[in-house]
Image 1 (cartoon, rainbow, N blue to C red):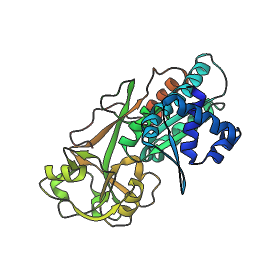
Image 2 (image 1 turned 90 degrees about the vertical axis):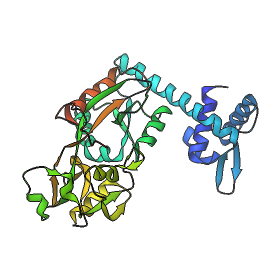
Image 3 (image 1 turned 180 degrees about the vertical axis):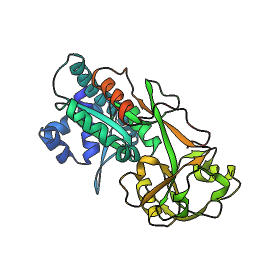
Image 4 (image 1 turned 30 degrees about the horizontal axis):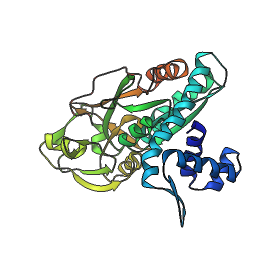
Length: 303
């Protein structure tokens, strides 16, 4: 089997169509089909099946695909790394991150990067959960990831700093006038805006777990799918939300209230291979701009 055959398979699966994959790869559909059939002969069985609404994977194909994706994307990363090491101009850098970080802290990093390295195009891959982020990094989707420290990661991991979690509410909430951090028991009886993406801590959703430490059960007023939505709901007076401080930036009428003890979560940059050239430069820029307070230790109630 060849790398090109695996590239063809990945394209057909992503496009769910031989026609669209052939257009994307700039080859004829007959040439594409021929290479896929040759690959299937080599592995000993069918990898794809035609369905009423497109192309799907057979059980053999589902087992084969992650390895094909990793091979194809590793080859792409190898080409980019070689060009960077040789000081070649141009190219691109693929970044993977959580949507909340992409919205909250990465825009100024990307802006500074474009000024410093205008010939290097950035490609951002956004994910909703840390599990999705890790899974796609293992499959070689990006050169570098920005997110919480991955457990048992076999590759370089660089601490970028501590992301501070605070209460976010509307500016006319009496809590917004507080000058001292709030103790958890003071929040009993308040309504909360919750996000479906809350991390799980010791088998419980994070807010349930942390409020339990304060001796109460949070009263949920609204469930949302994304943190950015939860913040805007909270600012409209629907309840409190616990979210990274950067999610309240540029949201009119938002107020942030610290808690005691503080909530912090470590953020990192991690990759599958050694950080060199453009990846190392991007990590340094993240350390400077994304979490300028420096690399602090997560607090005892960090999600």
